[in-house]
Image (cartoon, rainbow, N blue to C red; front, side, top):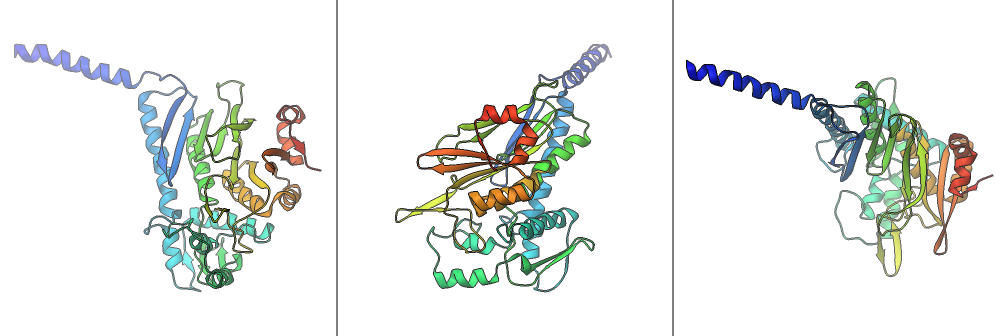
Length: 354
């Protein structure tokens, strides 16, 4: 009994100490990071958090990312998207709200860009060795490429938003890699919003969304747009960002070389061949990272002139990095100037497209 009288207060003190440690505020920012979708994620939260709150947030962030992976991955056979790709042609398939919403974004950007963005490009991506189907990196046989191209096109998929269903009309491989990362970024940000956090940054493989300020008061987040080269990452421009998302598409990280020629992973769905023009990188600033992601891909495919013309038509805030021999020229759309202001644009030393 005497032993119990001595041990019980000690045990209670230990439990209370453990509880108090987990409820003590952590030093800001609190950062969560890891790997998903074959890339990295990093979330920085400036709001005051305890260890207990941070643990719960990390579990919630992972749940959001894993839900998107389970719905939209082409790298796992059990995803909802892969089941859709294997479904009988012409038959409507009931799909999750999440998948329907992303398919609808893809179809909208496909229509607006006259097919420069195309979710059915997956078969062509696989042929060029950039998809989940591992194969030697080589130029596809022209006849095989032509046959695959004939199947491809936004009209080969129908999306019924009202009925929350979709169907494939031709044997296409739907690939959402040009929009799913942006959607996942939006989902994580929405989760953090639900937790009533005011100041955070979500970075998913270079697709970013920010809320509030990096110091919790008035300093905007500073987002680097990297030099479009395959070497170590360096910032070409730094954008002050608050309550917005930015997505960047470029042809300089994922490519292969064969017989002295460079083949980009970005496939033009209209020709079936990798893009080969001066436009190296497109960054789109938007309220939604999913929309920014899809638009950045479409504009990159279109190239400098057509892409900027479409950006003006759609009032998109766009920053383009264009090759000029060994140098780069930076161009921004009029909407970009409206978002950031003339003083910021002047500091960036960029050309404004007319």
